[in-house]
Length: 384
Image 1: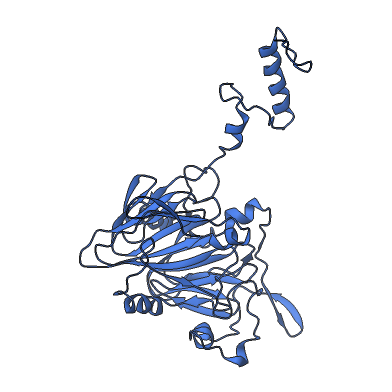
Image 2 (image 1 turned 45 degrees about the vertical axis):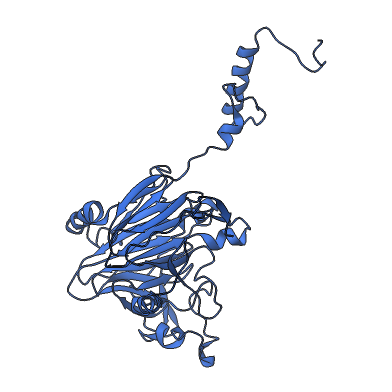
């Protein structure tokens, strides 16, 4: 059979192809034409296989806290304004990312140390783990928080961190930094100023403009919104105006529903929301508290959203893409988007509660959010 006129079988084709690909790479381009799976340059495979996050578990008591304890002795606030450990996913290294769009960092503050104010474009939260004196000042509201409390530090909102009282305090942070970095939209500002006598002057701490209990007093009543405060702009106005969510309220809600059937794939799960809109606290991330009753085991769930799961009470294990991860209090588990995952409470007496971060809002905004489950017969069903 005579080949088509546009096909030329050169006697030195392999050598010429190698030279062609070398020239393409040298000019910072990518050849997207090969379809044959047997050739060395299978561009489909290469294009569809970039760096990907892998399921991974970081252990707080064994690995994170000992390093932070050493850092407290060696790294002082005079050396650095923060003392945090970012959890870096092995599949994404050296990028600072726990999953592709978010990272978790653990922060230990020594007694009575508070850093100067700063702001940045990534959204962030702080979740208390140990100590009653965790401190975050947000837009003039000085918030002292303890274990289980969640504090927002939104996009472009002045804030500062530290500890009040005579004991150390440990918290974890979740930021959408990897997503914002991918979008080339990261900016930081440490030049905090306030007006005094008609002039702008530098300040090492924000002046208090709201009472320390402002978030709870104004926004902390579900279904009830004080009309006189509804127009109060807080921060840059890009997030929930309620800057602190107290654990006792969330724990009470979960406890009140512990006898409900719950969801077979998520057990009892409650979302932190903007009380003025009912939407997630940020446009890029949302957060949940999840309870597994004694002996409870969820059915396998898969979704396009990335998850960061931090057990807060109890212990158990998760199976992510067939791999078992045994966890306990204050650990963090990375569940990359697209992974099958189920959770198990190994106690027959005590519940497990977990703090969960997800990039679900940004996926929904882009019409990329999907969700599947396996039923009791192991059949795959579409959930969203």
